[in-house]
Length: 119
Image (cartoon, rainbow, N blue to C red):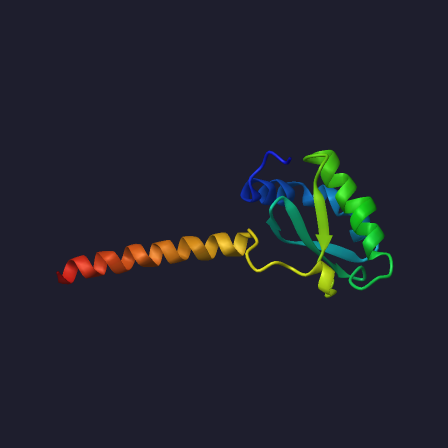
């Protein structure tokens, strides 16, 4: 069992991704961190690595191996490549979702303040 929340894992992966992406970058590609759900890390290989026949090997033998070495030995990584078995779940934790949630909370707080002015 991975002892991290999805949020903690997301930011840990985001922090070490530059160390992990050297091999992918050397082939003209890159790695986008899409999010984390239930301890599973969802990435997207971009550039020349997107759609490459070796992308599964790159995901498993480079990205997953390095993230396991740097963060936790039981991590699982999925390359969201457009196939049905590797699709991105709707309710992942990502920085975009976190920012949106904070904005929603700020918006509610602002509405409450405005209501109080008119009451």
